[in-house]
Amino acid sequence: MTPYGTLSSAAQGVFGVLALLLMAAAVYVLVAACTLRLRRLLRVGAAFLAAVSVLLLQGIGDVACCAKEGITPLLFAGVTARLPAVAIALLLALLAAAEAVFLWRLKKTRTTTLTPMSAKESLDALPDGICFFTADGQPLLVNTQMNRICAELFGAELLNAADFCRRLYGGAGNAAYLRTEPTLRIRTKDAKVWEFRLRTLTVRNTEVRELVACDVTTLCRLSGELDARNRSLKLLNERLRRYGSEVEKSTMEHELQAAKIRVHDNVGRSLLALRAYLEQPPSERDREALLLLWRHTAAVLRNEAEPEKQRSDWALLQKAAQSVDVQIEKEGALPEAQRERAVILTALHECLTNTVKHAKGNRLYITLRTEGNVLTAELRNNGAPPRGEIQETGGLKNLRRAVEKVGGSMTVEACPAFLLRLALPKGEWEAWENGK
Image 1: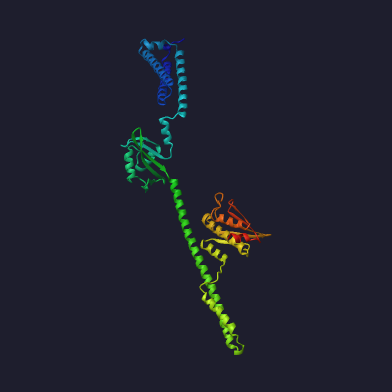
Image 2: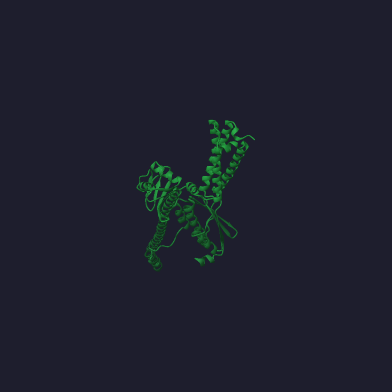
């Protein structure tokens, strides 16, 4: 077998390059095994592998130097030169296989074991910024997001955390400051909103400061939308209050006008009766009838401030709808019976409120049909359909209670659009009367 020392310089150079690469890999394996804190046996094996790689590289290098200077290799170099070239190649192959096994084990350990580097990588993956530092500003752990925020605000990465906090809370940052209490909130140039929280922790009897930057952009947007919706509801409530006041005023004016007309008619009839009385011959005059008519007129005049209660429920509902910019389109005739009519109008009032408040519509449709002894009413609107199942609370709950008291049924549909269907039996209404 050919001794290694008799190989050509080119062949020895190839062996030397392979030995150098294997030695570098062995050193990496040893450092990684110590960093990941593998079992002691594995760390000893990695150290042995690194020592063999270093010795083999040294022997191959010494043989090459001796051959170049023309001297006889001594000691370890002499042993290496006398070894068969096949044995050196086999030893290099064994070292490569062993290092491959160690590298595979290291990769598996990294994916199943938590290390300080794993914690750093996890913090870097967070969408929020975080920084731990000592009281004098020395950063202990800073993730990538916090460095980005610092670079955007002050044009440099975070080197002194205490100085960063002073400048940040002092208002020197290149951003719009939205508030400072109870937490600092700023808006950067990329339209993101960050909320900063600073607190002190005690770790092993040592004070450590924690600075956290939370991305609250979505929260601020939703809060703004909620404020806008609340303002809209406030305006709507104000319009509804004005509508209630106008309805009351209109009702009073209507009743007062009806009373005035009634008084006018009564006085006119009394005056005509007096004229006829005076034109008659004295023998044909009926004084008692004339006095009775005038007594009635006087009674009406005394009670003019208490007019009859006359109101048009449909007209009032139409006026209510107009006050909130909603048009009611009716197909079919409203029932003449007062109790049937009261249930239908109650449903219209509830749907009018829901159309404005929830559906944001401006049309309310009602279809009335009579089939046998059952009156069916269907109510829809042109607003947005409900987002989910409709919960019967408040007005709808009271409406169902009123419908069931008269022996009717009520169904509410949310898909594909809002639909309220009432089925009211005609004829028996004692239950409604008792429940009022």
